[in-house]
Amino acid sequence: GKRMAVVVIDEISLVKPTLLACIDLRLQEATGLNEPFGGIPVVMLGDFCQLPPIKATSLTDAAVQLNLHDETKRRELHNEKIMSSFLSSSSAKKQSTTTTTSSSSTSSSATANPKAAAKANAEAAKAARAAAKKHLLPVCKKGAYKRQTKVDKMSKRQAAKRYAVNSLYRRGTTAFAKSRFLILSEQIRSGGDKRHTKFVRRLSKGKRIRLRDLKRGYKRLSAKDFRKNGHKWRFAPILVGTNRERFDLTEVQAIEFAKQNNTHVIRWPVMVNNKTWINKPANTTHVRENDPLFYQFWVPDAVSFGTHNVSQESHVCNGTKLESHSLTFANEQQRQFVAEQRATLPAGSVITLKEPPLSANFRLFPDKPLDERLALWEEHVQGPSLVQNDTIFPLPADTANSNHYRHRDFSDHLLVRGKAGSDAYFPSKVQTKLPIPFELGFSITIYKAQGRTLDNVILSISKAQKRLTFPSIFVAFSRVKCADDIRLLLVDRGGSYDSLEYL
Image (spheres, rainbow, N blue to C red):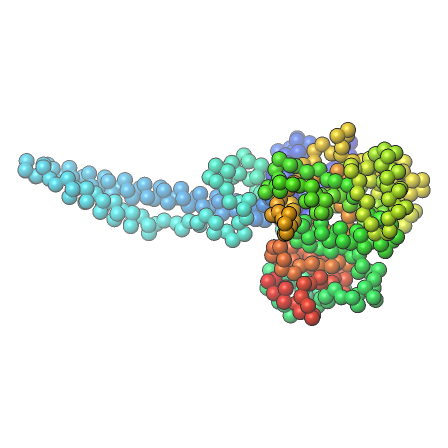
């Protein structure tokens, strides 16, 4: 068989310690060698200024925390030995003194005051502790590591399991810590724009974000951009910090895109986990009908992204760029309903299906010319395209009659909008699952944008639902090649940048 020369792991900042440990174990199993990664050289590429793994600890933080944990345990053990030694020596001296005194004293001294003896013992122990403290090592208090997250605030039992000698967490963290680190100082992506490169480099070094740098280097999104470069900015991806913002912006942009292209928006319900719905309203009908969170949107010719590793051989994975092409309807009745709605409703209208279509079909490799797309299809995709002389790939729906994505879990709890008025209800949180693993690309969370190079981007980073973290800001500004490819979508009026002061 072929010999593996090297293993390359990209975006190492998103790799959890346990995953790296599994890679180490499997390579040892494959080679039969009890050496790190089975004796195969491993090249890990990434930028740890970016966001860490979702709901997990990054390898750099894990290495710091593991070293802190081990050093704390070592010092605690050292201090226990010192205290035990001084206390035992103090007890021995006290016992020796008592024995000597007893042998030379009269019978009347045998009935000495017990309170005085207890007091003397306490003073002796206090003096021993005071003497021992001079030899104790300082111990780091719990939570002293400033980058400690909620994931890392564990009980003693959880910590013991994580930091056990044979744990996957320790194995992966140790393998990473023993690696040789090389810093690549040249900025390739934004090398042509010196000011933008300087700003990104400041972020990478953890320096303070200055409002004057944002004002001088980056423009606000304005009507002028749409008049002069409408094709560039009208439907540029909008980077946001929360899924709540993404849902709202995706609906608005999908409708506007349909109007511009003389077509319609089609949507269908997502799967909802009713059992875990937090603060669930009494009547959910109005909530479902009026919140875009409860629907999956689709528009012809719109940029989309895969959300699941459907076929790695065909390059249809989580984050793969796609282009919407067509729908395969579940039955004839569904097809006729959509045809009637398209014939009667104006462009930009939203057509709601009661259930998902059989599949949503997408064009693979949309940024490539046709001849290159066909060559890539022939090389990677097994089977014919749905459309002759094109690269159309179907993504089947996950329905009760199919089991295409059985390993997919429901999402984290997502924020559902509340409503005021006579039929008011409070905001709530619900878990959902997309019937078909894709999302429209009009708005993307900063997490999803990590690792991509975008032609141009609109940053919605005004202080809103939550403050963005430093890694989020770094990822947002480092997705493009120059500052002119960024526009800031701000809530301020009159050219103000006040909503960015929190940065």
